[in-house]
Image (cartoon, rainbow, N blue to C red; front, side, top):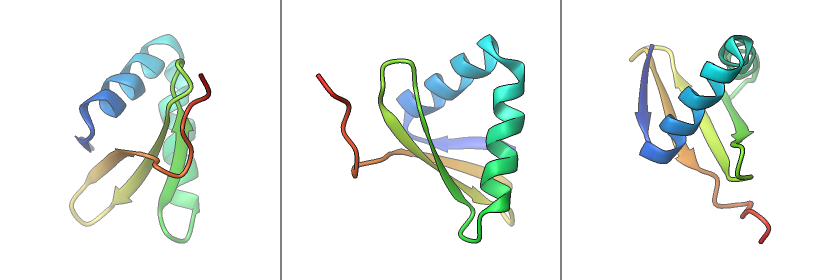
Length: 72
């Protein structure tokens, strides 16, 4: 599955996967279980990202979640 979209979000997701190999499996299960095939995650700095699955194209699209901004 190809990751596309925000470079910071992609880097954050990959870094979290390196620290916890089960994280990617859990987030994939989460995105597949929702009716709109989207989910969100926060990186270690508190930034929130939206993850959308396009199963036809075989991609995961990552974008910053504008609804929530990190505290600070």
